[in-house]
Image 1 (tube, rainbow, N blue to C red):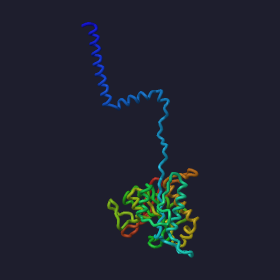
Image 2: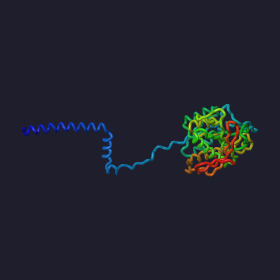
Image 3: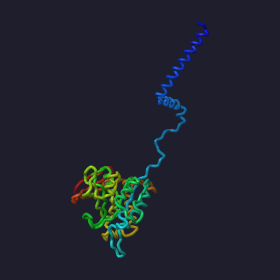
Image 4: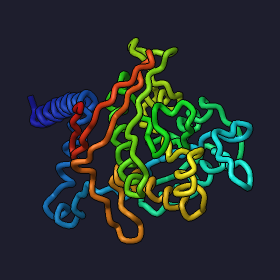
Length: 317
């Protein structure tokens, strides 16, 4: 074989082997695309490029999601609620509730990261289900319904405030959050001088939860338990009790003070700072409150609870 023939044969084998290795490399790359990506990444992460790259951070530039507090002015429209009969005429609960709600909205907006939604912004009727629906539509984190009490069917009380909260027969964690919220509000209302009747739990005679246990009597509280948001009803004072009315409900100044107390209770529970000075109220610690549970057979069981910073303890006296 001549030297020219050998050179041509070598060239032939070189071309054949080149195509074989090229094909193997292509198949390997297609079968393992992440190997190619990793290789590129390693190459780009050279010491020089690493030194010039900004440091990684876990901080996010997106603002924290605001806490949605739905405020519900009890009654409205042709549903006037209770009333006080003064010399000037009847002062209806729906009117007092609405004023309290407006003042509470203003007071809550003095705290950081809270967005307030009202179930009604005028004197109109809303069903209880409509009120729950508004909370759902706005992704409520808390639902607070504002009311005033009446001597009719008041459960043995004739004066002072109470907070209706969930029993805990269903969605116990959310129920406990509502109870904590109620305790914080009760604490602040007590500082105004209002007699404290504590937390009120009431079982329904007609409804049960999906787990078969007695549901909460109050529809807005029941709605919160079914849809995962703490829900409370504040019975601020007895509107048809002369002393309660004139001491706490008859002037705009008194209603503003009441609403500010509600706001402090909510803010203390949420542990949110004020906008003006960034101060956060200390969480409740060693706070004793009465708990009254009206069962579906009408009997009432009264106990006491002490709220500590990170827990609570129930006991009977």
